[in-house]
Length: 72
Image (cartoon, one colour):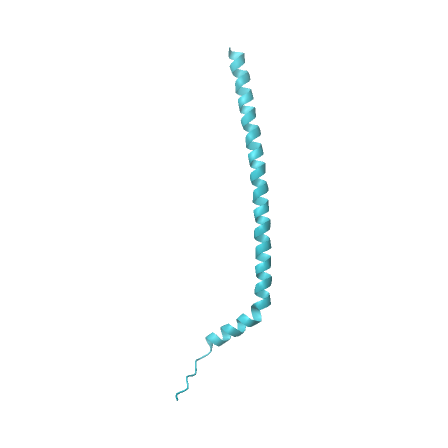
């Protein structure tokens, strides 16, 4: 009886370890894929920001300049 309990415990613990290892590997794969996507998004956004930086600088300069109102 004790031997049977020991064998069942070893098999149960071994199955749990195998399932956890698989889950950890899948989680790591998903995490790496998400990091890759986020990195690509950031690179695309920084490229777009660099493309429109002169225009945004002009708009910010206009917003910071004193306003002149003409009276009619």
